[in-house]
Image 1 (cartoon, helix red, strand yellow):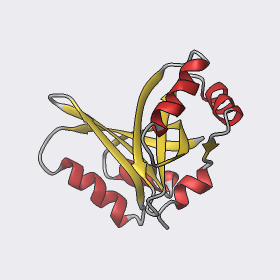
Image 2 (cartoon, one colour; image 1 turned 60 degrees about the vertical axis):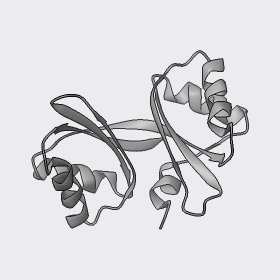
Image 3 (cartoon, one colour; image 1 turned 90 degrees about the horizontal axis):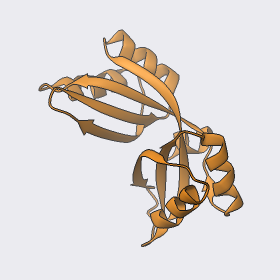
Image 4 (cartoon, helix red, strand yellow; image 1 turned 45 degrees about the horizontal axis):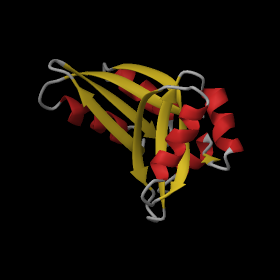
Length: 144
């Protein structure tokens, strides 16, 4: 499992810049960032190299932050890679609450990030299917 920060962010000019500046000033390096918006607020999801430091820096800067666990799966960067993972997740009856993907700097693999209700059961199913589920140390070091 990987720790992910979720930040509720007012949808106004400069607010996302302030969030990223708070992380940068605290020495936190982001590995992935996803922004979903509504009319007045956005939800920012962040995977970074030092989640505890990031949470403290964002709270000190006045942001509302929560931390939760997600699953990160390394897959070959090829057509159908994401579908393979989703079929395993669906095969155990789990629903994906949200997901996002990014490509590793070496360009050979993608990392698919999933939020599911039963993280342990889905992680076990992915491993049984021969998929590489990344641990915290592996994902936080991505790109280093």
